[in-house]
Each structure stands twice: as structure tokens, then as C-alpha cells.
Length: 226
Image 1 (cartoon, rainbow, N blue to C red):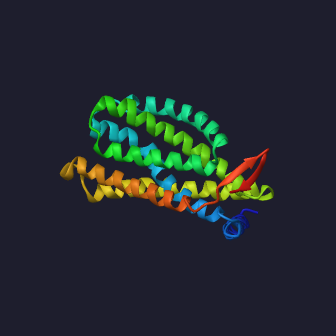
Image 2: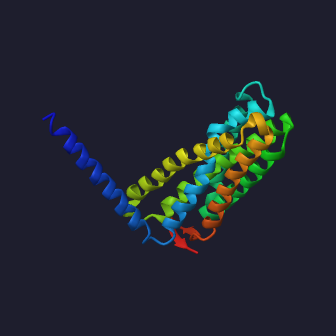
Image 3: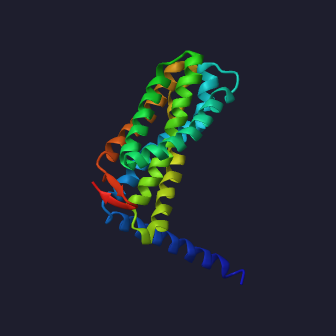
């Protein structure tokens, strides 16, 4: 039985990879779904990097003694933002809500590139980033549910989560690669500004793609493409 185990594992991997590829192909047949997944990959790339890099940036560049001085307000704001944008998404649409969130990210990255005041960074930039983070997750998951055929929701949510995992790897790698090429010891704050600029570009690409997705309005519990 032990000798057969590697073969069974190989078959399982091939089967899983084949099924995943078929699901990706099927997603292309659902109006707006594949475009949404690609857009989600780009802006998730930036968001996952923020989670990893915010503490380091706050201490190494802005000059805070502890990352908690920034992560604390941002985390509280993320909880509030998730709840608040649940209401916003119900009031507007998930697409419109996500556009607002991504525009908030554009503002956050621009501010992070140029704000040097610790108080302003701690109590304005970090909380806005937290609200943007929580609201993006809320609106994106809602839109994913609305775009997916109910009978295949679990399958397509798996692809949605898979794109997030790939983005979680690429984003920090892009950040680290930028700082490797532009050594902060040599270029100082400019190196971090360029690194943040790459995240801003990712969000802008995601936003541009997202603008072409369907605008789904819920009417008495049903989803209607508008």
C-alpha cells in the first residue's frame, strides 16, 4: 500500500489541476465573472502587500517606535469599514461600492508616498487604509456571489480564493523586489515611494478592469444586471 501512495497522490494532483483549469474556463462563459477575477487579482496584489508591509513602513520610514501605533487604528477602522460598507453595498451596488473602496486605496497610496507627519499618518492615513481594506473585502465577496451561478457558487468561490492566494505571493514579492533594486540604504525614502507606486499601479489596473464588469442591482432578493 505504501508503494501505491505516491501514484495515488500524483493522480489526485492531476485531477485537481484539471478540474481547476476547467473551472477557470467555465468562468469565462459567465458574463463579467472572469474579468472580475482578473481585476480582483490586481488590486488584491496591492492589498495583501499592505498587510505585510504597513508595519515595516511605519517604523522604518515614518519613524514610529512600534508597528502597533499604526496597525491598531487601522485594524479598528477595518472592522468598522467592513460593517459600514455592508450597508453601502446594500444601498448602492457591489460594483459601485467596490469602486469607492478602490478610489480610497488610490488616495491612501498617494498619501503614503508623501505624508511624513506622524500624527496625520497614524490618525488619517492608517484608518482610511483600514476602512478601505475592510470595505474592499466586503464588496468584492458580495459581487463574487452575485456574479456566480448559484449552483456553482462554491466552485467559483474556490477560484476567487485561489486568485487571492496568488496575489498574496506576487504582491510582497513585487514590493521586496523593488526595494532590492532600489536599496533604501542608498536611495532612502525614494525607494519606498517607488515601491508604493508599484502598488498604486496595481490598484489602478484593477480599477480599470473593474469598471467594465456588470453592475448588478438586487431587487427583492434577486440580482438584476443593470
